[in-house]
Length: 109
Image (cartoon, rainbow, N blue to C red; front, side, top):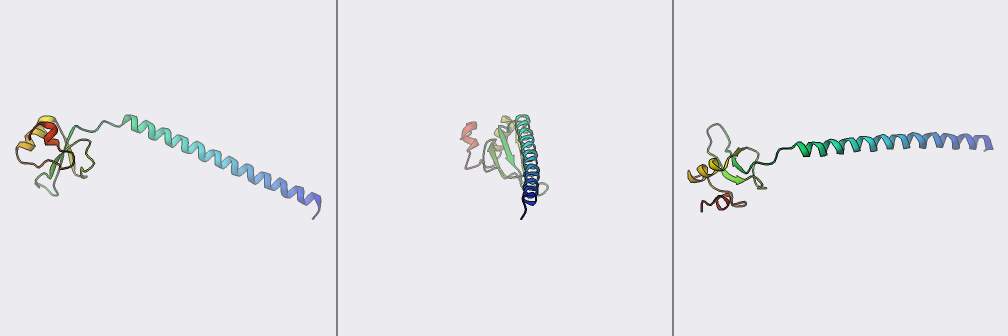
């Protein structure tokens, strides 16, 4: 192998590495932008409601249970409630979640 072909190969390697470095920098820039967008979205996210009613399946189905807004066991079918609405639902027989115990927090026990 001649010295000139070795030099050409090294220059080729340098170009490839510069291209890879540029690509990596673009990936970093893109990821920083996505993280900034996620952080901005978290700041704009409304706080969870204080009380939630978990709804049953189907039109006219009875509610499943009442939850505190921070409860991890809330299902996907839900509706936020005011304190008065949660109290009314509990007194009308909608069960309280056994995990977050909204009836205790609301003083219904």
